[in-house]
Image 1 (tube, rainbow, N blue to C red):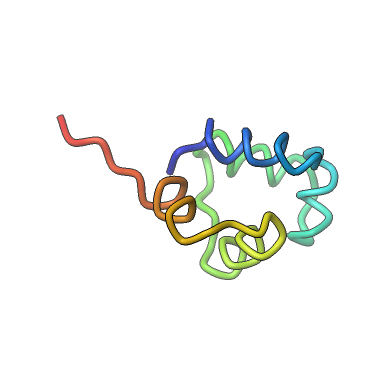
Image 2: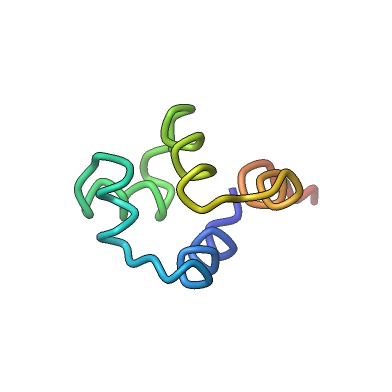
Length: 70
């Protein structure tokens, strides 16, 4: 997952971490753990983020399915 791009989308949409956590129905600490990679976003949360941020298909692929091959 491309966390930097996801956080950039929060900013582009004028959304704070509090706004995002409220939209997902989780507390800020839980959101922080997901953004730091300690816990994965579940499928439902990803769908909620896509709708909340109005992401287009290319952006969805770039953020959630970005894999770097070494």
